Amino acid sequence: MKKILILLIFYLFNTSGYAETYYFKGCKLSNVATGEYIINLNKKVIDVTLMAADGRVQTYSDPIKKIEKYRVVTEKIASGRGDNIYFEYYLNLKTKQVVKLQYEKQSGPDIDIFAIREKKESNCADVKGGWDKNKI
Image (tube, rainbow, N blue to C red; front, side, top):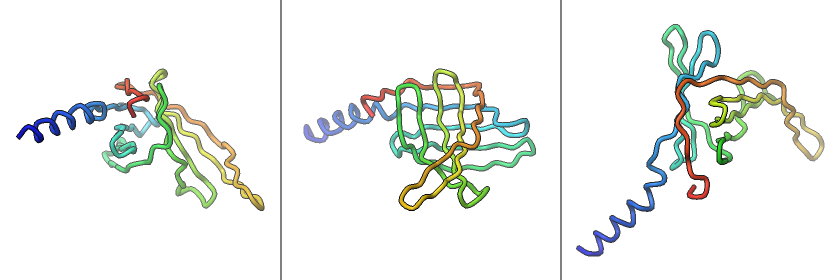
């Protein structure tokens, strides 16, 4: 019984840093679309819900590449707009924005270069951050 109690206490202390929910909600992506971004530190993904003005909803998860003190950055993600088009975005806690970068992949004989084509900043109405980078 003592062992179970000790294990339970140990588990609670070790998972308490990850139990907190961090999010960016009410992000105005365009005149007809808004987004919500839930940062899932346990799975190292951002769970995204996009909502169109006509009621359509799209959900997906994007892998996290880097977690900084005031910013969470996704991996580069292949876009449906073309074979060599990629994007990544980051959630900026200080500015309360989602910043999306679009890249064009340019391949050479022994290297791939991602040139930025477009940068789009979207303001968010409700943001909760405060993750502890050192604990993560």
